[in-house]
Amino acid sequence: MLDHPPARLNIALHNERTVIMPLTAASERELIHTRQVVCRGYRRSDGYWDIEGHLVDTKSYSWKSDYRGDVPPGVPVHEMWLRLTIDDDFFIHGAEASSDFHPFRVCPEVTPNFAALKGLRIGPGWRRHLRELVGGTKGCTHLVELLAPLATAAYQTIYRIREKKRREENQLDPHKKPELIDTCHALASDSEVVERYWPDFYTGKRAAKG
Image (cartoon, rainbow, N blue to C red; front, side, top):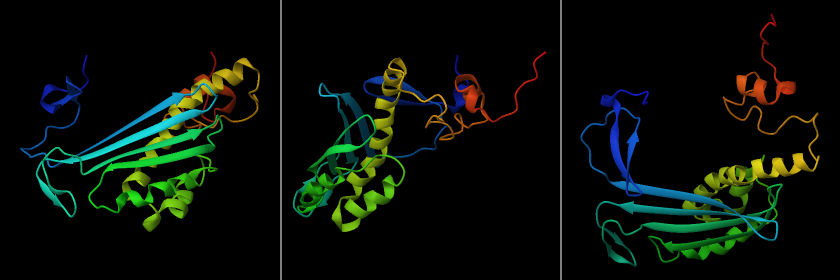
């Protein structure tokens, strides 16, 4: 049962199926730009993880490139790929970038620079290190933007599997606060979620026992 009244629903086509979007009804409009970002996480046979991102920008109108000439609607302005190979602790053991479509001939010249991410850890200070290594003229705006959802995808890929393995091998310190606590509203230390799953680290008001 939908929580939103039919008047608030927009219908969109996505991956050849109808998707009901629970957003307020839009005014009459024309599609101009589409950005698609897909991130996937893979477990490798050697114990590492590959986290891959794919970014595609398209326009609904033709435009002129300085070296591609007239580019028809729907043909990518940008199509770029990134792969981070990381371990269980989110340290990067390899980084690779590719730019298949771009507006300027020189754009792909910076893709080798992303190998400099090797040795970093996805965690505190991540964005600052990205600015230092591949920010500004050292990198590509769109590939750098792609690194943000890649970091999230890394956690989504690894965290539960890693924690399950460590729990089974008795490697978890029961006195150490889980990393997820206080990272969002649902996981606030005083939330009902933390009270249920991590009661030892719950800081909210506990219900009186009757």
